[in-house]
Length: 141
Image (cartoon, rainbow, N blue to C red; front, side, top):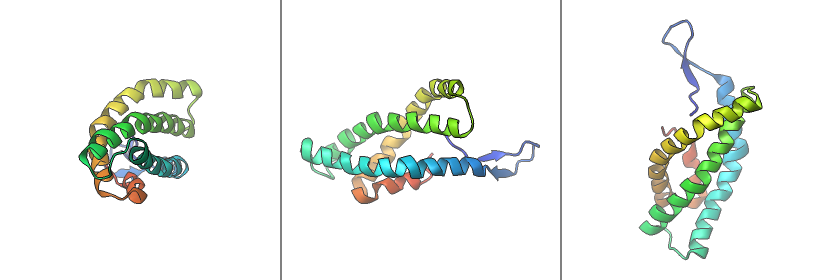
């Protein structure tokens, strides 16, 4: 739940960009989401086509299988990686990071489960596998 914009502390409603937070989030994207997401999308597609013998672009392939596996496997992995990385990068201690993860994981997972399946269904249905990772660049939610 990263929001690089915030109100100024002096009460002025002008929004200011937190450049350090933008840099930390971007670094995470380049170091984790990019490489891992690339292999995830290709591997997921290959697994479903070759192991489960499902055809691409079928409703069952996209809606039930691909979105379900993505949400139940990659979603928690991403959250359990993102939250600690951002907390450590912000200078928090290990105990603070663990407390953040305990407090934030389930609410974030529930919120993610309400939004991302719709986004991913469209992504998996209409975007070629090679470009599916690019939808992570879109500001959704």
